[in-house]
Length: 342
Image (cartoon, rainbow, N blue to C red; front, side, top):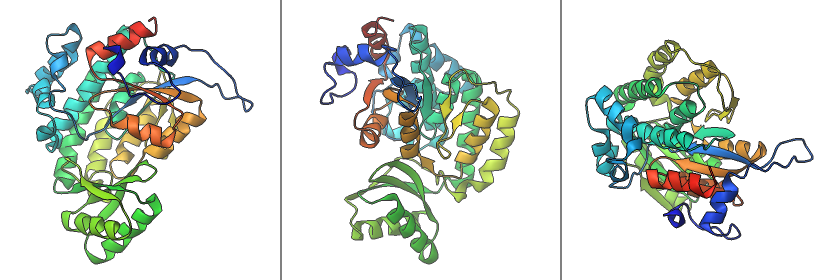
């Protein structure tokens, strides 16, 4: 159903109207020479996945990436997605499954004639973004994600992550620094949106940081169903072997510019994008700056491809005027293409 795509935002009109606008390709050039009204494809990272996310793809002609990935991995990717959060704590299965879902959405969107002006992915989603940008093949991306998950599990598999709501980034960063001097390793791992950050590290230290965050005025501290101290120095042991895996792949020049998690850099070189993926293992994901960079480049419309709808809320908190459409099932992708006349 077309009306089920995205969420209604005041001033954006009906779902069909928003979808038609989303790929209108009308261009306005601002006074500073930036081409406005661009569309970005965005891809989610590892997080909460609703139970039953795999069901819409079963028996659909567009499900071939799931079949190919399952053959390559030796386990049923759709079954993992069907189980939802129950499987998300196992990084070695969660990450390949989410990547495959996002890649399948993009492949169908491309087959239906939809093209982005820019791409970006949140954490794990940057691998699907690199695939969508033309820098790697589907199989190369899957192999990199599998290697990333294996190395991350070995390096920091005992780590945990928590979402902190209602405190500025700087306050949480300072709080983590205090806890590191007293209780153990904890770091600011994600700047997701104003007032929403993720901390990551050793269990005792993360719990203490969460307790102090609540005392400092945080609205809530919530656990994430992710096993691993991602985007922190706990992943240092994984960085070198992962970079070696990246260097063994022939990365090509990107067909579409990618905005990287690492300091929101605009990347057009496949080789550079691969190096930034290695850097991402131990560095925070600055999604707030990514969306701000996309907006500065003229992006007004976003299509979130992959399981869930986490990025929609984050993007609206960073840029309230943005139009965001979610396409996570074959029907939703096809409805988007039909509504835009593609």
